[in-house]
Image (cartoon, rainbow, N blue to C red; front, side):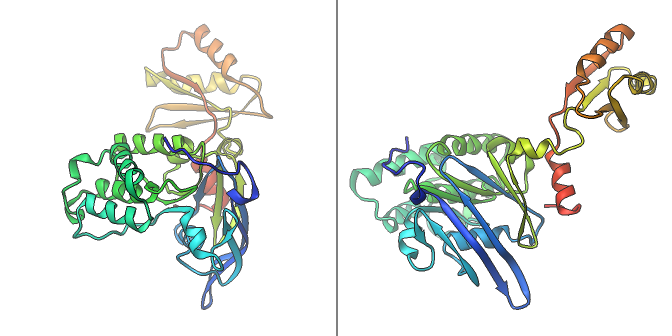
Length: 324
């Protein structure tokens, strides 16, 4: 659906940021940041408000000049070869700015013209994007009359219309309902096979859904750069076992029994959710022993599952408890 000829996995098809810095007077928004993103990677940018996520993305997209350092896209420096770099990029900025008096169709046709799409290819891409983002019902509506969800979809449509090699998406599912979020995440996963994608999001479930790499930043500096799975493994909930009882009156007695099992480091009760969690010591696997104990005691369980780890807890630990 997104055919192209490209040099696979080469230095010319990646984002390369070296010692990137952006300073506003005494405020350092991006502080000597270096990283690369290669084809097939969907990089999730996480950080507290004001951490420097949007500023970094704007620099890569060519909308802000860095104070120091450099950024290149597919081999083109975003300052010295700005036009060439921007041709490689599809950018969905925060708020998805557009021309509110234009209809959805006329706006996207304007974008097609500005991207030098012509002839049958132009018409084909417009139809494909209308269909991918389910924009047919609102093509004749002016953008200022659209819901927030539809405006976000129009913003995403303009970003992918020219089938770019690089996508930079700032909160791509902001304002979408759960079904629309699922569709957009599916589209991102589909495009990830042949594109470089950077996503800024405050939705940690979005990281699990679409990202295969995460950079956590704060005060303009990289604090962690890893896969979501490896970050989750840092969580104290990694390999913990959570249990929910059909009869909550059994919970405290069960907690005592489970605490005595070999390999159980600690237990915790969430009274609001009527859930007991057992934490393992030294990488122990507790699920089998707890399941056997539950069967032996005849406990009526509504839930019993192995935790993979909680990214929100790891995020809070790394950033010192700040919220996204």
